[in-house]
Length: 159
Image (cartoon, rainbow, N blue to C red; front, side):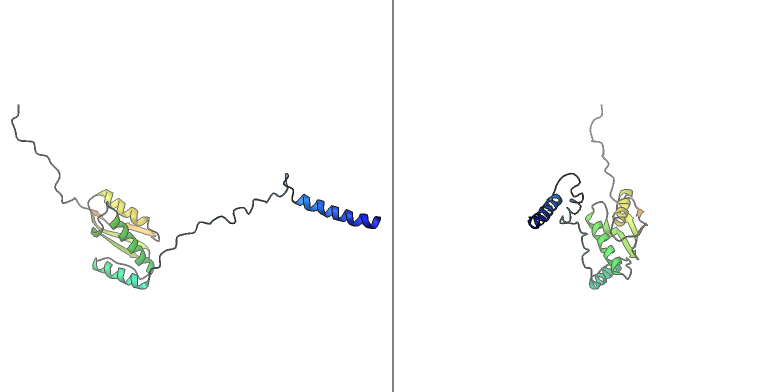
């Protein structure tokens, strides 16, 4: 009888032990949710498009035609490309009157704009461009050549 009881007790003890591990009571397994987000999607940085040496050479040639300077690195050429594209897209900045020089990730803005707002906007665009370490704004504000909208009084009798 003892021979039968001992194995039965051992099996019963194992079963109780396994049931205790599956318990969801207080303090059952405090780390249950520790890895709950392991399968959640992770936000990844958007990769920078591949910018080739050929594209950099083309950008340097365009910059030279506009009397602009681009350093020898791919970063400088890529920064120049991004800033020029942003200036063209922004209605507040007259891109072709703004020269953009980029050397060692430092941007210098030269040329003329017609308002303090356009000057500030060009600087903001350059500063917010990824990879730019510093911006020197040498833009000059020149009054617009457009005549002011002046209304002439209507001709007629004055009473």
